[in-house]
Image (cartoon, rainbow, N blue to C red; front, side, top):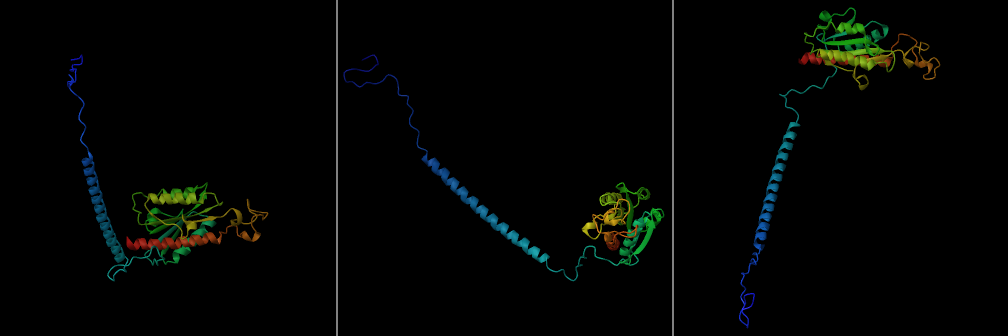
Length: 283
C-alpha cells in the first residue's frame, strides 16, 4: 500500500475519500413544452374573447344608429314643432319696449332709428330721455329696455350711470331683454367699451342681453360722429384738405349720423322687440 491508501501490484485501488461530484440534473424539456401549450391556449382564448367583444360592439352600434334614424323622422302630428330661433315676431300690444337715452342730437337720431325697428314689430314703445326716465314707472313697465349713452372718456356717461344706480337689485328683471346703443367721437374712442360696460350692468340684474342683427353690431348699435368722413367737412380735426376722402363723403349737416349706423340701430330695435315678444310668450 502506498501513501495514498491504494494497494500496489495490480490490485484495485480504492480512494480513501468518497466521490462528491453531484449527479447531473434531469432534462427540463418537458416543462418547456408544457409552458408553450399553456401560452398557446391562453392566446386562443384571448382571441376568442376579443372576437366576441367586437361582435357585441358592432351589434350595439347598429342599434344606436337605428335609434338615431328613428329620431330623424318627422315629428308626429301630436308632437309640437319647435319654433325657429328668434324670428321677427309681431309683438302686438302685449310686448312693451322702453328706450332711454341721454340728450343730444346724435343719440336722438339713433334712438329714432331704434324706434323705427321696434315699431316694425307692432310692439308698444315708450321713449324717454334719461332725465325723465324712472325705474318704478318705466323700467318695471317694460319687457325690453334699450339704453343709449354718449362715450365719455371710453366710459358710460355719468348721468346714465346715475340712472342705472336707481335700479333696485331686489326687483326680478330676469325676464326682461336688455340692449344698448352709443355715439362716440372717434373710430377707436371707446364705443365697444362703453357698450360692454352698459351690458355688464344689465347682466347684474340678470337681464336677457341682445345684440344687433349682424356680427358688425354684436354688442349693439354705435355711431362715429367726429372723425373722418363721419363729421362735417371743415370742422375741427376733419380732413380739410381732402387727402383721405373725397369731399362728397362728408355730411353737410353738422348733426348728421351716417345711414350705416342708423341701419344698425333699426336692426337692433327690431331684434330686441322680436326676442322680447318670444320671451314674454314663453315665460
